[in-house]
Length: 312
Image (cartoon, rainbow, N blue to C red):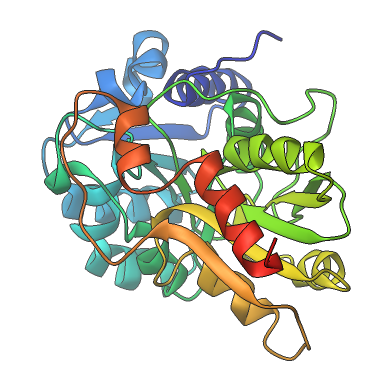
């Protein structure tokens, strides 16, 4: 299999592959199929793809109805609209009856760098984590994104997948079978641990390499399932280290940092600091990396945070 560095393309190709295997898979779109890449499935199975227009609320309710008939609906929009505009319908029509609707929150975080704060979702994981019965996923690369689509074929209940708009480096071993739930230790270390998700996983690995050259040993854990959180791995990996850092392309309120602290709440643990967006909306910018740097979402920021906690 040829994996895609672009997460949107990885999603679209994996959805098409799943649709070829399972005739119950259907797609719903909110006038963004070229961007979310659900258009790939529409090209081959137009009768199983439903263009709902710019009406995410209607799309969520329709997806719930399709799920009740035995279909496996994948609904698509930008993350800020999928989580915000459709919240009431996701709560009442999808999560309360616990139906298997899959929500693709595309162009998540700051990845839609050119369109600014109205199109950048920095609170979507917090919104979706708060919904009972909702699974929340954030892939680190195209390999993991494709694995999530395949795993959602049989996953019980609703799920939200936060899909980056851009190319991300591969960090997932291609021969590792993907499962929803487990956090994956990508690097071991005894001085500190960085729990990361999405684009920040590769940044955390880069920071760990730089710190290793300075004699500081850092573990890196990819927490791509934020809910249900893998408490066992988080507690075990945090045990014995002198510093804990979380790194996410999301507000520090309600996202990965909050989830890790919730997992550690009954444990004695090292000081914890969060690398994330400091309770702000996004901005428009000329390029993605520049925007990440503006908000302090870099390997350098992770390195500085680890050093500050270790007082080195």
